[in-house]
Image (tube, rainbow, N blue to C red):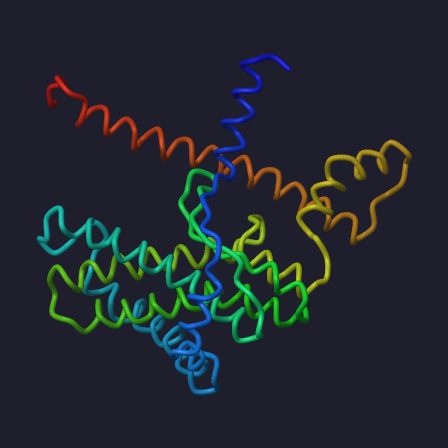
Length: 277
């Protein structure tokens, strides 16, 4: 393989997935669970989480949207986006802590955690591989605990945006709620190897992404060349495989465009010696 091709492949893989992890987190997570994290997994805790999620959605669409506007930070200046970024990072950490605490609720170990870059977008993660020794429904619970907790946090932010006085605080909370709801939808995207896909594969007992992609790339064309008409299952696998391939490259293109836009803004505004327009 030529040098440029190796470099291109390395860049492609880095854009798809690049991670930095920290080992030895199980002790800290165990202490956090014993210190009160277990309360989220009682009947009362689960009920409050779902009440926050569902009630927050109602408040966001029924009240908050009428009081707040996107990209309007209530006169907070540069501190509005800074506070929004800090809140979003904190929510990412809480998302992964929810996964970790769910693992501990089943008596399993959290081996490591860290941050990764997927499709040019930042994520936090924890290693929940010890859950493979649990039941498939326990793995579904662990996979869903992250996005459910994110949506619950978004619900509390929506309540603040709806009922606090109009100003910088409520404006930042509105933007944070909006971003966390988008994050939840993204995590539930069955075309990406994230929480929703993991829960779906555990529930269905199938590696849908891998099997569908393989069938779309090879099996479908083999059947067509042999004159065999794909059945309903094969047609569904082919459609899902096509969506995975298109979705993967589509998200990669969007990530490249997003980073190109950010780098362009930085070069235009922050390059030494460059004037402003």
